[in-house]
Image (cartoon, rainbow, N blue to C red; front, side, top):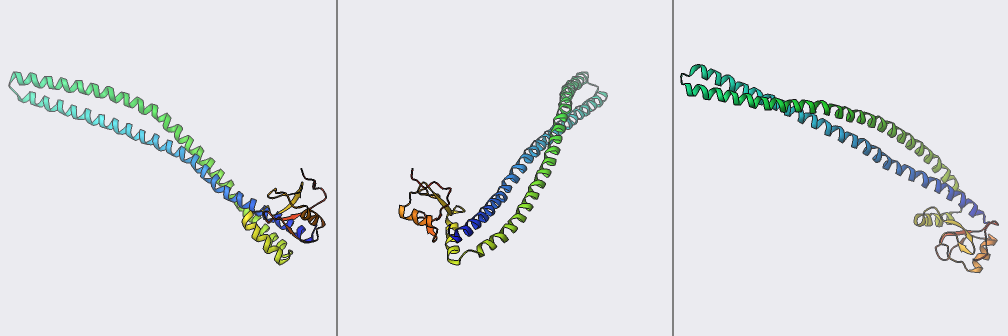
Length: 241
């Protein structure tokens, strides 16, 4: 194997480690979105429970106001009864008071129903609050773990960058330039072996003369189809399928 091939394989392994670490870091943001989404669902449910509780309370208060208004009517009709000397008017005012009392009875029945619904909804609200507290606690823990992983990965990347620079410095300048050009287009699968007479990158068959030359390891060889750098080791299967 050509000396620069061995150096390029080391460099390629560094680049693969860097790419993998960068992908992991990029994936952490997706994890953060998922964690926040789970917490947001609990927040939405809690807000809905709170909103319904407010609506029920407002409805109860409204019924109390209506009851008070009817009671005020009864007091007014009673005063008017005391002042009138007309028997028909007296009776009419009495009927109006009875109507108000019936209305109050209906309102109080409705109010009891609302109070029962408030009591029942209190359990729903408490469950939503508990779920939100648990979701926020889980969110804080998960985000803390993600932050820690990100810190570790960035530290790892810094070390890999140093190692990459060292490895790149050992490769002949023109070969490194070609390698970096290929890396920009094809990622981290650039220096590939030959298997069954084909390129390990694009899997296209290679001319027999190229295969023979690659086996000698006398120079850097490139795939005539995809441009990748080719090499050979004794454990590779050379026969064509």
